[in-house]
Image (cartoon, rainbow, N blue to C red; front, top):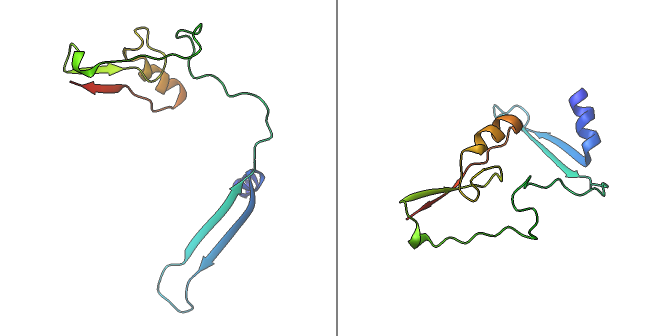
Length: 109
């Protein structure tokens, strides 16, 4: 019941329907439809990039795939690599700490 109260606090206009023909051996189908309430928070979202080139307005790196020195190169997508833009595996620690699932971008030559 606590889960239902929690869900009703999060959703507006929720509807639940259960249907199965009378005397039918078919399973009843359950459907839930809900609309999330609009957030009233005015705070900005936390930045993803904790420390890479913070003095720049936008961090942009260009790679010419034909010029890669190795047949497979891993690029960072978690923003925590000490070798950014290359991946150093920092996402493994980040994923364990946060429950995230980010991994590298792999470029093949």
